[in-house]
Length: 263
Image (tube, rainbow, N blue to C red; front, top):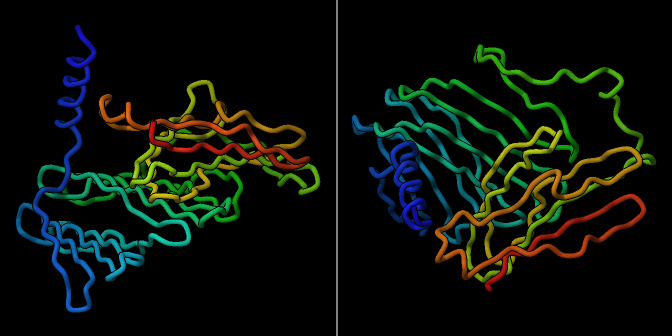
């Protein structure tokens, strides 16, 4: 079977499991900002995405089919980014919401993942944020009563590494392609660290810190953390590529920097 046929079959399979929200309408308000409203099958509001006139600041809200608010997040396209990636059920209910926010050039970031059933009940929540820039276990609310198998960290391991003993590894990516791009950060199969696949969106010239970890006495190889890929059809992907700079290193810090470029 040829590769194009395999790609088409894979695309069709994905199309039947993940749904975009089609019942949407975008309007411009009196101040020049935009409002994108998507609806449930019963006509009630499902999600509301608002932006100011310059599309620098905004907000994302989601509701169940009875009008109950499920979450709200601020959005921004300056000083880094803040965005929400959504998938939906066929009835218009949000299925998954993945919030991501990071300052431009900082090692801190926020990453929260909600999952819902088709009636709007939250079935899963994970908080993978690093507000202080360093690893911690994901937060999973007890109220969800969802069984999660998370490795228990020994008390000795949980003690914070003194700063003078830390070897900090930082991963960054910069969009030099000239257009807005999405990049899939693939978790490496052989990695012993708590990581998972994630999708990020980059504006032209945007520099994003995608990972960082401190360990005593050693740096970490980038291939033990993430491998960035371009999630686009093969024909379009041929026009763009991701390249890795030679790592920049000081006594206490090693920085890996990928560039998304036009081939």
